[in-house]
Structure formats: C-alpha cells, structure tokens
Figure 1 (tube, one colour):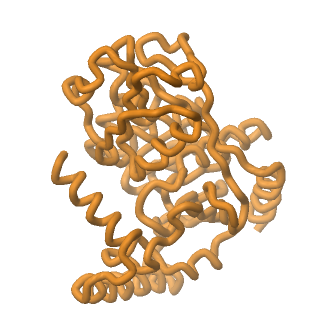
Figure 2: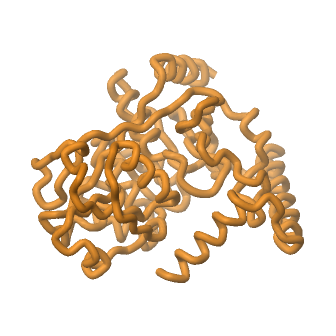
Figure 3: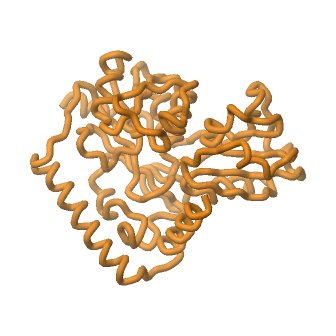
Amino acid sequence: MRIQNFLSKLANHIWYESKDPSLALRLLELIFSKAVNIRRRAYRGGHKKHVKLDVPIIAVGNITVGGTGKTPLTIWIANYLKSEGYQPGIVSRGYGGRGQKSPSQVYPDSDPNLVGDEPVLIAKRTQCPVCVFKRRSEAALLLIDEAGCDVIIADDSLQHYSLNRDIEIALVDGGRRFGNGHMLPAGPLREPIDRLSQVDMIVQNQGSTPIGYPMTLSGERATNLLFPERRILLQKLSGEKVHAMAGIANPKNFFEFLRNKGLECTEHSFPDHYDYKPEDLSFAKNDVLLMTEKDAVKCSSFAAENHWYLPIDANLPHSFGPDLLKLLATKSNG
C-alpha cells in the first residue's frame, strides 16, 4: 500500500502541481497520444469493429484519469430513466474485482472482491440489473436478453470504442479540471481536451464556472455499517474525534466535503479499489470512523459499531433529465 500511495502522490504532484513534466514523460506522452489517435481513427474508419446493439447505449466517462463523480452520475441517470418508465441496465469493467471469464451479473450482496466495488454500489443504489465484463458488449447482451433492459448505461466507457454508443456523456472535475493539460503519462488526460467537443453532453462536478451542466454532490446523514437502520446527521459529529477514510481516486474531495460540513477529521487515504482487511481499520480504535460508501461495500463484512459511511447523491439541473430524454428519443429513432 505504501508504494501505491507514493506513486499516486507522485503522479498527482506532476499532473496537478507541476506545469512542466520532464522530457522523458513528454516523449512517452507523444507515443501515447499517437496511439490514442490511431486507435480512434481505426474505429471511426471501420478498420476496427465495434458492436452495435438493438437498444440505445449511453456511455458515461471522462477524459482524465481518476475520480470525477462518475458513480453518483451513473446512479442518478439510472434512477431517472427508471422513473420515466425505462428498464435501464448498467455495464462496467468491474475494476477492483478479480476478473471474470464471462459476463457476471452483479447484485447488492455480490462480493466486491470478485465483481468490483463500484458495480456492487451501483446495484445497491439503483436496484437495476448490473453486469461486469471486460467486453462490455457481451455484458450488455446478457442484460438485454436475460433482464429485459431497453437501455444500457456503460459506466466509465468513454474510451471503450468497441461498444458502439448512441449518447456520450463526459464528466469534468471542476476543481482539478485537466491538470497540467498533458496526456498520459505526463499529465492526467486520457484523450485530448478537444474530445469534449465531440460528446453529446458535458457535466461538471463542482467548480464556479461550469462547462455544460453543473453537478453538485450532497450527503447529510451517515449510515452505520453494522446497523444500517441507524443514521446520524453529520453536524452531530462536530466536536467528536472522527477518523475519515477514503480509498477512492481523489480522497481529497471526500475530506474537503467533510470539512465543509464542519467536521475536523484525521484523514486516512488508501489506494483506489483497495482490498481492505480488518487490521487496516485498527487506527480508529473506538473513535468514530467515517468512510465513503464505496469503501463501506468492502468493509461491511468486518464492520464495528463505530464504523459509518456517508451516502453521496448527485444533484443536477432540472433541464438535464428532459434533455437526456430528448437525445435518447432522437438517437433511438435514428
């Protein structure tokens, strides 16, 4: 874990604090950039095949490495479509899982070590069919054939061109934006910034000058891992000794969120998709331990009474849902 944390901090320093990456990184960036362009041209030119399915596909993703709030956005979209009479399904690569040899459907009580933490979280929060597999087209086919889904949300799939998509939604971190503006490994960009001009909708998480639809995150009550029926307002934890734990791509977002709620916490960062053991949580002893909902998915089996998690909800403008439905209708009709 120490090596992972060191590499993560080093990358964040280079990408978000240093404007001038080394010559070696820029040379590697050039190679990566050319590979990205060649791959995208191959799909657009028909040299590499992509799978077209009989139901609309909504690809949700970002052009940078790391967390931007894709999971809360995916949950919001799934719940909204369900409220509008659709039967949405969600497909994912299943990062953090041990890999699957065939498409695996995910349920709220599935083992996150096998199928990934985010898919289990999405299944819990949406009660929608979820399936993971490295070839998302096969996962989508399973949901269409066996679960009767009439629209598929492909989580973190903006660069997964082998699955044809009808709608692309790109999420931007309003705080960190695009870092130093370089592509991997010199910067955090998976694709050039002008890729955003090609997507159907842009959503920006936080930030004072949003591009596209502004999204905010909210969470007021913590839930107890051992006794889920127990909930507590965050403000009631003010003044108590609280340990905050986050094993996500950008833990600072979670810690800053808690500070804005008036909590003073001892912060503990873990690598994204970290495989927790009971001893990893021993630092809290009998003090309050507050973690992200994604961490809770992996820690619930050995939770203690002082362990809590904070459910986070995405908030979007009233126009976002209807605009998405209009796009969906237009794309569905060819």
